[in-house]
Each structure stands twice: as C-alpha cells, then as structure tokens.
Image (cartoon, rainbow, N blue to C red; front, side, top):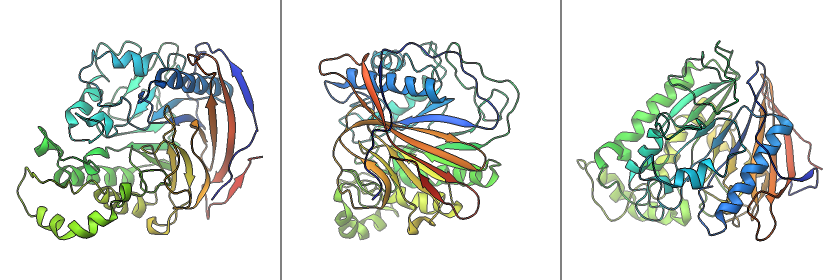
Length: 405
C-alpha cells in the first residue's frame, strides 16, 4: 500500500471562471474525475464543489483539458440531447471549469434501470451531444463511443474529429508534436450485468469487442507519442467495491460455475438471450486488456466505477509496465472493498477527490486532491487539499519519487 494522506496544501475559495488558456508545446496538463452524475441527494452540491475545486487547481497549476471516466449521468443516462440532466449534471456543476472535457461511457450511462448496462442506445445520446446544437458551451467531447486524440491538442492534429472548446479557450491551428496519445475505450458492452436489449446485434460483446480491439491495437501500433494512456469506466484492477476485472463484485464463482455455459454460448447465433450475462464478471474486459494494453505496455490505464481514488502499481499479469489510476470519487465517495487486494502507491476512500496530471516528454507528475464543503452548502464554498504527489520518469526502468509529506 502507498501513502495515505498529507496536509501539503489547503485552500478555500469562491471561484470565478478560468482565464483564457491555450495548450503549449512541451507539456500536457489535465484533471481526471469520474462517477460524478449525482447519484445521491447531496449530488448537486458535491459535484459542484468538485467542479469548483478542479477549476481552482487548474488555475493554479494549469490544465489543458479534463477526462471524465464514465457514469456521467445517474442512474440511467440521458434520453435525448435536450434532457434537462445536461444542465443539471454537467453544464452547471462545471461552469467554472473552462476547458474541454473528454468523456467516456459508464454502465449507468447505458442503462434502463439502475446501472445494469443493457441499453447502449442511451450512451449513443452522449455521442450525439458532441455535435448537437444544445452543446452551446462547447465543453463536452465524445465524438464516438471509442475514440483517440493526441495532446497537446490543436485543431491541426489528425484526430479524426473536431474538438469542442469553451469560450475563451484558444486552440492552436497548427499541429503540435504529440507528447501523449489518449485512447477512450467503451467498456460497458464487455462488462454489462444485463444482456443487450433492443441493440443486441450491434453491441453484443462477442462482435463489438473484437472490432474495438482491432481499432485499439492498430492505434497503439501507429502511435508516435512518447506516452500512451487509455481511459474507460471499468477497472482492470481495483481495491474498491467492484474489484478486479474477471471477478467483479465477487463473481469469480460465476466464471467457475458457468464457464462451460459461457463456452457454449459463444457458439450460438445472435441475438443471445440467457439469464446469466457472460459479461457480468468483467472477464471479457480482462481479456481485452490482456490482448492490447498489457501486450503493448500502455503507460497508464485510467478509469472509474469504484468511488474512491487510487494509484495502483503495475501488475505482473499485465506486463509489469502499465500503471493504473482510479478516479471515481467525483460526487458519491464510498469505502474500499478490499484495501489490500492490489499493491498501490497511494489510495484513499470515503472522500470526494480527483487527480491532476502533468506530462512532459520523459517525465510525469500526478497529484491527488481531496475536496470538502460546508454542511448544507451549495458547493460554491469548498476546501481543496493535496493528499499525494508523485513523479515518474519514462525512459529506461521507471523510477518513482514520492513528494508527499
């Protein structure tokens, strides 16, 4: 286990919108947060406090953009680009965070009920919002269910889509040599508790997964960026409540008992209708990474799903190179499932929190921040405290240096 907490820096403020910002060559800075779509009654205030705290840290340390790691809208996603949740659970809470937000989909974004992940058409609405006229603030970015982009970002980089930028954000028009290439992956069809409903033929994991895998592996092979980061909603490893892929929510026994059934199911024509969804253990997601991220030695895999904050050490089963970042405490924090399940550099539960990162060609830094706000407050007043910071070198055998006090 890593370090627990520190009192490195504490500040309290009422925020105002960020000043104009522009990506610059040589450095990439961003915040990462997830599971922020107001699952509880305290959600609006908690989400707003985290949004304001991220805006403050971005003003102090610099941010080019943010990554949102899924479960963007509890409990069952959005149903249209005019859904009132766009304002209540995204535009308003992050009004002061004046940077592009690159989002990925979670199980709650693809559900008819409370998170079963069986209705991917609802996730498609979030893709549609990328180009919708309702996206007036031009902050939301999700050009497709899975996509990639390079940073420092510019309109001249060949990302295959137009990057939305909020007012006051200056996007360079000339291509900038990439430092990081980001791959947003769609984990929900490979992890759903319930089988696909009206979109079974399109999103069945047996057909959807291999197509995304080919796209991802091709992108990794062709990437010219020194650093490669994948992000999605579901963990590969996690000490949180849901746990490791292949054994989500203690479902390892399901894999053992239904292993022969799973093999038989793979031989059946689509659509498949069974009581047990072969994806509920997360085994297809585990296989996906074992055949992509782990083989390619992706530098970081970042995700949400568990509502705590962790920096997990590389895993021998994943090539011993990839670091794992969990940031799922954007609105409703909770306790670990098993704090000793996997080794970490740092972890903390039961706090609102987010990560800030800085990447240069050969080095990176990551800092965890805790957020609190007054009881009964609306999130406009808050306290943000740095819990942990670590630097890491890219070249040769990686060495880490904790700067936590």
